[in-house]
Image (cartoon, rainbow, N blue to C red):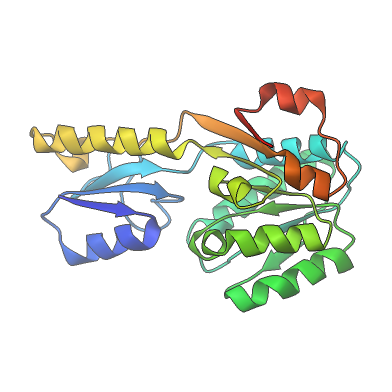
Length: 236
């Protein structure tokens, strides 16, 4: 059995063997990454759990707009275009932005050194907030990203709770511990005889919304009571 965390690890495992079962977790777009034939019937020796969920980018955009009282007509998007699932997430965000009458200038960063410049671009574009499409690069420097957001007075929403813990304003995304527990159940089924080809790839069913009050204060934001009421965790 091979357990792979993230897209690159899952792709490496798939390339290494066609016989040893592979269970991946937190892969944004397993179809686009070439890991499976379909979500319902993966085929081959690879299955697992994806971060991909319908309408999640729209929900994140709505939460950010509510945090800033809907005052922004421009929300920038920070992404790494080389990550397999980023284009899919971006398209979902664009669809949601169109219905909310929000423009989404795209800030592409392929290296850590490019990230700082993208924040300057966001300010130049008069963005009132930032939608962060987290992936391995951006996640690995989440503390720096949160620091840059605060320095440029740019309210941002992230995918993972870890980014809020690292100083980010807020996060909304899949509950990772829940995903890991479900992955363990996949492993258990395979060890008991189930075939990866027949085990459907699961999409997230449990999400967590986290608000960092310290970050909000640094940005001069008064967090709406409606958001505090629905937050799964509030960092003080």
